[in-house]
Length: 46
Image (cartoon, rainbow, N blue to C red):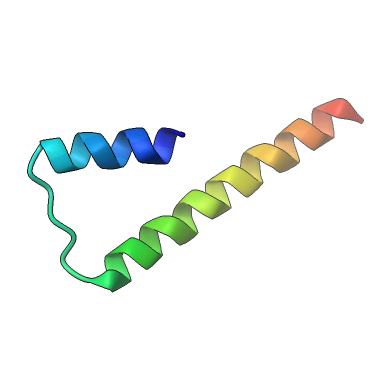
């Protein structure tokens, strides 16, 4: 959800992805961030 919002904002601001590698890096960082928050949530639930 937030990733789509960020990408829409970036495109509206005129940002252009230089290469597919940039998209892969941002996807990996987003996945790691989501895993971090999932782990934090799981710790609170226990």
